[in-house]
Image (cartoon, rainbow, N blue to C red; front, side, top):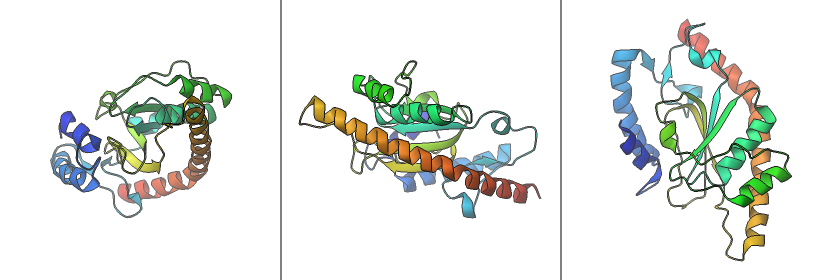
Length: 218
C-alpha cells in the first residue's frame, strides 16, 4: 500500500482512518507479504494487530531494542506531544517514545508550559509527520488520540504490532487563552492517568504476547 493512500485512509477525507477501508488494503498487502517474507496475521487475543513476523529468538530487532511507542494525532502540536513527553518521563528507560501528526503544526507554547508544570522537559520536542514513520521505523505500540468527529483525527495506525485509540478533546476553547490553558492542563492530567494505567497493563500484555509467540514457534 503506497504512503499517499495510507495517509488518506488514516484520516485526510471521508471517514478518518476507517478501519474497514484500511483492512481491505491491508488484507491485500498481507497476501503479498506472506508469499514473500513469511509474515502472518495474528488472531484471537492479538486483536488490534495487523502484520506480525514469526518470532525467531535472537534475530528480531524488536526484541533486541526498546519497544517503540508512537502517539499519533491530527497536528502533533499538543496532545500527542504531551503524551510523548509524559511517557518518556515515566518510562523512558523501558520504551523508545515518539509522536507524530497527520498534518503537523507548530507546537503550542502552552503545550510546553503544561509539560514543565508536570516536571517533563519539553526541550527537543518538534512537530513530526506520520510519514517519518510509515513502514520505515518499527513501531511496537501505536496509540491514536482524537475527538469523535474531529477532522483528520486518526483512529488507527496499521504498521504497529498493537494499537489503541484514546478519545481526547481538541484543546481549543473559544472563551480565551486562560480557558484554553486550563483545558490543556485537564488533557495533560487525563493523559498522565491513561499512561499510568497503560503502563500497569504492560506486564499482562507482554505475558500474553509471549504465550502467542511460543504457540507460533511450536
